[in-house]
Image (cartoon, rainbow, N blue to C red; front, side, top):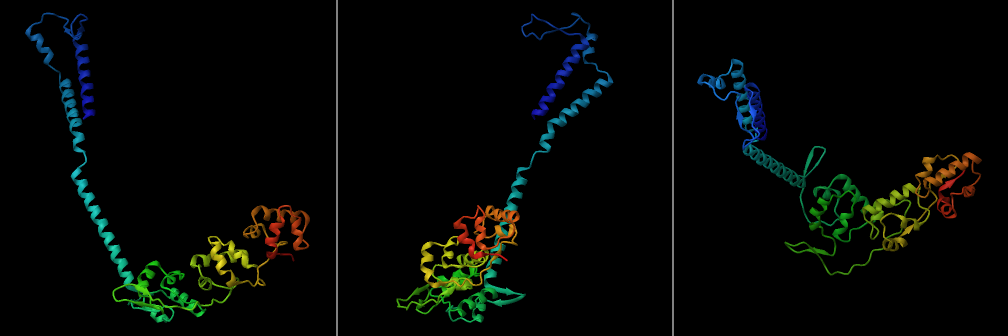
Length: 344
């Protein structure tokens, strides 16, 4: 609308200017409105007035063309204006489609909890009360667990592990949270009974505390670490990852350096840990590259680079103690890395 009004004003000014130039109209400075037009001839005959309203063929074509253009400009915005009603209908249809997809996903998730599919074979899932310490592999399969998870539980029990309460089932590595929440109400361990229509309730029975056999921190797997009090699947995996990066533990106290392990938890399990360091992986400092040295948790890049530079300048190290000649290797660093280096 604003564009069409602007064009109309421009056309109107163009017509006035052309009329003024054609008939030599002049402005009167002393008129009240300062826009009084005085013709060149004050008196005219009747037929002379008709000249103002008579146009040539070209002028008539120009006027008609201009009127068509102005009319088109006037109605063009209305022709391309958005249809609000159509937009609202499209929005409602889009919302309905999204809602249908959400319902479809919810139904698919519920169906996934009711059946366990393995290699194209559908196995019906049935829920029943069970003791995780005595349930065979076939029973776990009926409950809908995956083969890998069942193998993890079996290995844990075979190595002396035992579930003392239902919450410990959630610590099994690979057990999905949805599976645990689905099975937890049906866990029935010795000393725990189920009231009809209610969740499991612990019976006030005195149990003798089970003695946990000490484990070798250089040979234990995640299942054996999880059997320790306060150690879950995450901490167990962190301990093993730290052991692999080091090349093995040479002291039980190194377990306390594992990220996220509280000191209180370490003090509880310390007496249940032993360390056999005869199989520790050692790095030959006369042949190791910079990349091999810097990845060790106890050897930073600056120390690794200094060790390589010193070897390039002075030749191979004659003994492990010779690395102390490198300025970057302090007594504290040497004490930590000594079990992990050797010379050939």
